[in-house]
Length: 320
Length: 290
Image 1 (cartoon, rainbow over the protein chains, first blue to last red):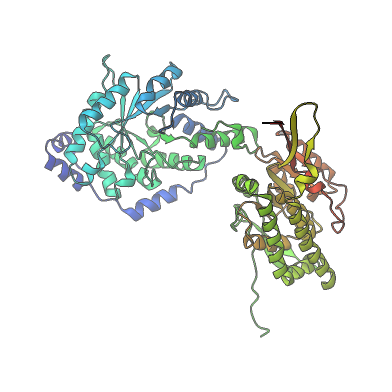
Image 2 (tube, each protein chain N blue to C red):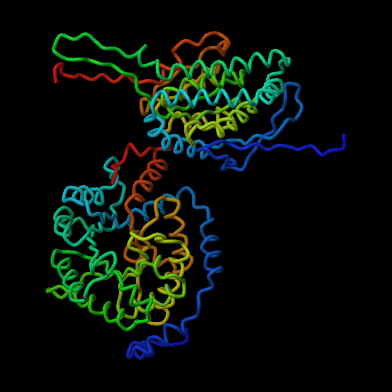
């Protein structure tokens, strides 16, 4: 990258300068990205490094339930689990957040209290993002007022694929403004791309830059409702983008792969990639998260295996 | 044609209906009864055992949920396919156990007959070990046997085919799924048996066969919290190891079928013990007249 922060200001001035910049980003070498992601996945992480990675991964989990059948009871149970993932072991760290629909934010907040576990809420007509802007903003404000610490918004993929970059940009800026609270603080904004619908890695790189320039605190792969969800190569491209963005502007942006990460082994592959591509600074729940529901149980099972020396079973952990 | 190059075989494990190599990538040489090289067999590691347990757990619900009649058909089908491949099994038994061809044929016949015998029990065991209990009240009180779950079986070391069939068939016919560690010195009949299972309507994961050393793999199975029962007949005579395994199995209250002092004679009528050892009794009360 040869541009400077002042150039980035120019970039976002008009639709055509935005398009010129995004299309001027170097293309992603698809074969190279996939080979690099696969290569990093072969690293062997054992013993104390594995124990560290498992605990770190547990601290990074956004424990998620985004179903039509969610009840207050289910959300309370999930929140309790986020605070004490393994009730049998007090040394087990808490998860980073619980992620729910906006109408469940108050319930989650009530259970979590001052535990330090955040409440993340999806918003902006999740998961399709197909609604008028004022509805999306109202959705966001609702969640923020109910106490959400983090807002997971979806971009308008239709607009992005049609090339209306300015519209997507303006929407992110508007949602970010809606994340402001009356006390001057604001909820952190995660921008979901739904990479499974973006077709190419080039698009993933472009949308990553677009969202970061619009002020996203986090960029997130997927809603979990579309296959393929998070993959290693897609996350690799996004990690490269946040690394390059910090080099250029000095601002750090977080990354959240979500959907399809089910095993501790997968999670550790992601952590290796974070360390190798973005750097150690991102190995922190403030800068890297996993959006997952079943992943936590596998992490707990592996953790129990490491502490007890024997294989554990799914019977010994809660279902969700 | 004497200058044809030998086809040297390296067999694999049987886990979840597929034939993976050992996760450890190790294999070991299998010799016949005279010490001559026969083939390579995969040397199962603790991670293969872990994968096999996961496959068995996944298969348990659907397998236990099938009708007893259907399980009978499937176990009978195993016998049919074995019958088709009789010469192969006879050769494997000759090589492994050093028997004469005619004795090996008797062993194979007995193994096939045993499968047919156990197949017949699938829809009869409930009548024999279940009961309508007399109670002092206006209730039906019914006890019925249900499968225990995932059962780890250490197969006999000496009787590599008849012994193997005699410990696997009674476990699966009642609806359990099984992870079996074959005889270490004589694994080839177990490998052939896996090939039969893969082509005889047995759903993947119902039987998982690990070739390798019981002393290496068994402690992981015995301590595994997701294994519900273990059959220790494969370490018959090794009191020290059997005791260690029983202690490890106690943590999640596994059912343990204890190791005998010496390997039993597999030719005799087995009775119901091998089936009832891995059955739980469920008793329900039901009001009369409703």
